[in-house]
Length: 237
Image 1 (cartoon, one colour):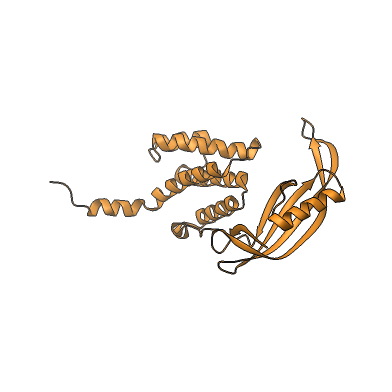
Image 2 (cartoon, one colour):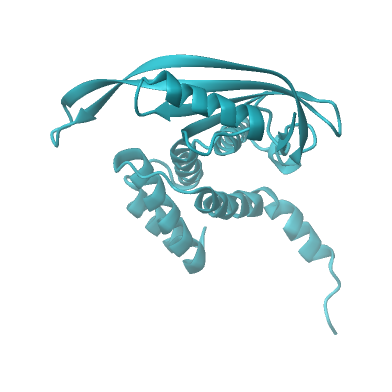
């Protein structure tokens, strides 16, 4: 059977040849919470997982796709319906698809080359943010982006207080300009919301915030080179 899925080696959707297919029912404990944060009620849910081992028809790279389906009942007929649809279409339309996993979980794009030359703490922070974003862990990615801003401020002006005070001090010291200050305020607030208010940003928002931080650190990294270019560039007469 053939269906289209993302190939980790090709970096895009390709026709996949199914080599093997297995199903496994999984019982998961779930719960609801009261307004005070304490557990209100515990319930048990049944997940019906499909394991599709495939081979890319373009590059022959093997992959394992695990799709988690939540079944509203423990009815064998519901599980059978999900299994039949996955066998025929590669995915179930009637089942409630909760999450999909792809193995191996390699990044589709390598870490940007310029990050290899950063000071180690910056490099590790950027790489962990890239990995979190690639895995869809957007709240963690946004908190990591906020940590990069905190590291930048700490290096420039020291530990002088909260983010608002740090950004204002960076602005007053002309380390960042007014436009950068406005952008960083938005990024920091998104990071705070991810850490403290249960905010999970979408993929595009994480991407934009990451680009803002890349520009900030990139300007810092290439500052000396820019000055060299400025000095070497002939002046207009």
